Image 1 (cartoon, rainbow, N blue to C red):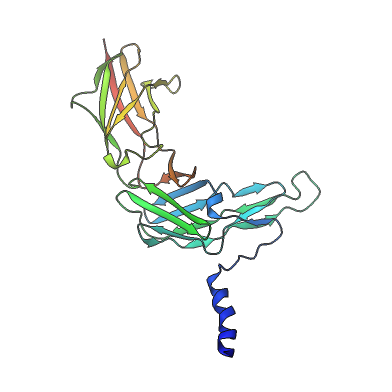
Image 2: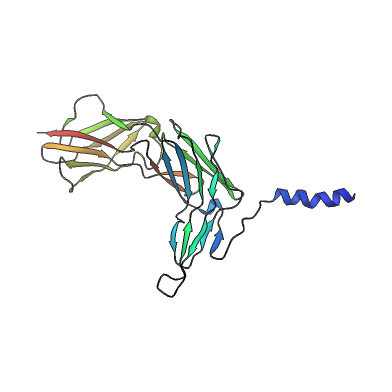
Length: 252
């Protein structure tokens, strides 16, 4: 019986998450209370920052992640490289005195991102955040349906097929940020409104503009929505360009 009395506290202690020791100016924040994530992919690494928590914060506090934070990318472990917190406190009597320089909690793995749509899962004992990610390496493209030259008329209904089709359904990728700009101009971009999506097909009507050469742009990816709740992740990949630009001619 004495063995049971000794072992039971040890077993209970092991089941509970180990708290991260915080310092003045830091606050532990559960994953489910963070709503902005920043995903950066390069040709040989995948990185995630948690929250808008880096940089200078007047009077603090700096966010630290919970000790049991973990990440998986298609089942591959994405280790925690920092739990965040205060990097520096600015001393002195000037206007910036008492400000904290904060590092965001971050996960990173030194491996190329998947060359297909993928799934990021992050967890701690507060819960789980799931982010469905597009292909972070594919070349984005669009072609006319039916196929033909990009010689179009002002006010003409247009349908294009987006590639890769796996982008469709990720909030922020095929957003209604289509624009038309006179070739060689750096200002005066004309937005294209009332864009409809059906599968990988994007349908819209060209705005009324004078004939001539133009550049047609799809807006770049901004973010993907994660679940549950209102969490979102912005994306940046050095291995691809999420946007698309096509030279077209508006004919009389």
